[in-house]
Image (cartoon, rainbow, N blue to C red; front, top):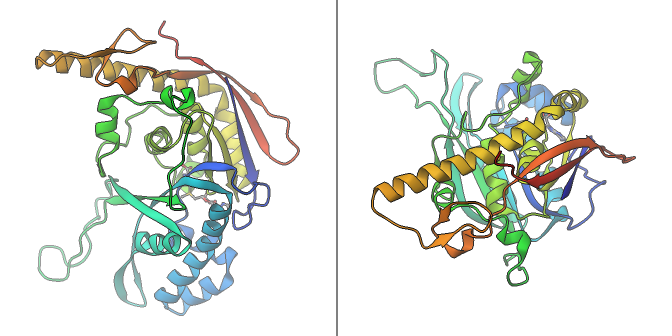
Length: 354
Ligand SMILES: C[S@@+](CC[C@H](N)C(=O)[O-])C[C@H]1O[C@@H](n2cnc3c(N)ncnc32)[C@H](O)[C@@H]1O
């Protein structure tokens, strides 16, 4: 099986290279409005944002930053298929502007934006992102009442385009082979993810400065979302591609991907790391299988049996739906000749257990 992965250097407020209704899943994390590291980027997109910040008008800056993201959400509405899902990772911002400290609720503003574009909000996920700064507690120390809670969570907002879920022909292989294990379902479909950082091995960055500027999310986040909300054969889009974590996850999960990113330097960084994708994908697949075997042992030790056997692995499974699971690994990655985008072609094989 082969998957393709295209990345466009450009502005996602206009995704002209991407056809209407050609994407089944969006997994992305935008620059967060009112987080200082993104002020310059937003000001380049709209100079009025810099003016509002300088004038001490936080609310106007927040609105103008979201107006830029709204243009990307318009494009997502165009390129997603009916029933397609958009997962948007976003955190709120706390900031003092003109002497006044407050929270800027990015998640609420993004939710409104999708809803007003006709998307149906689905239950969302909170994941814990511990702040590791020694000075993380803000306000007046140990004396009430003027201290503030530290934000240590982010949201994954989940939306479905159109009123109906996607439909498939009965018994579609690409869906059953992409099944997840019962105990994975139990962990992934909870609304509070506490253990997503450092869960999966990922690729190292050679350039620390770029890493600091990237605000990359842990591989586990897009990997889980892709496994949860797409099947083999689907295409996953990330319009805020950054270091390409979503594409890495799509490669590991055996899905096609597309991305769009303003900063060309991130694409070069990805090129440097691409040779390690086969080993990464094997490690991701084997980790899943090892965890499943540990689960089987625990369940048996508790005295609970299994009714079904996986077709392709020597392991029992809890439900009939899991029998067809086919994990895959990337055997090679090459360049995709394409006039419009940087592209990769990944060859996939059934996960090797040797
Ligand atoms: C929060 S980072 C995404 C990080 C990414 N999830 C990762 O794991 O590396 C947001 C990215 O969006 C890019 N970006 C911001 N506005 C953009 C736009 N209008 N078009 C394309 N890319 C944009 C930024 O350059 C930045 O790399």
